[in-house]
Image (tube, rainbow, N blue to C red):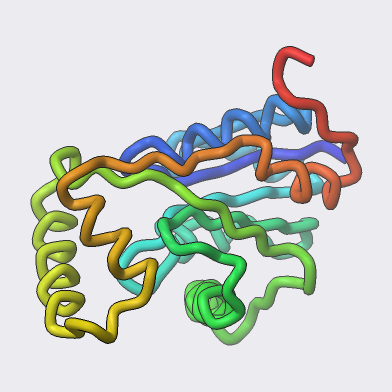
Length: 183
């Protein structure tokens, strides 16, 4: 099936995943807003990736116009450890909120990946939001989770959890055997 990978990436982690995924699938890859509209319309499958920001998936509200009648997969990129069910449930709520009441994602079509964070590289709006987040976390005191403490530490020391091998389940779900780049 002809596949197109679309993505929205502010700081590069989602783009890294999208390009690796497109290579693994033999698919075209476009940043949302720079897509070849004809290629997207002709594709039978769309894989959309977006970073998790302030309760939503970046670009999903714009990308969903391409979804009707397509075989759709989504991947999100964030800092939280997504093995925790509560984290996955919240991401699923964010995805459904972005899709709206008229669209839904079939079971097994959402993949959650870990990204990167460098406070110094953030734009003004994201820095302001992250400073507010930092204040909220500090107010928790001893009630902070391991993820909370890791995020606070990342304000001082950049982190990069991007692992393109984590794309293997998504590639497999698209019906393509996964091979790491260069193998």
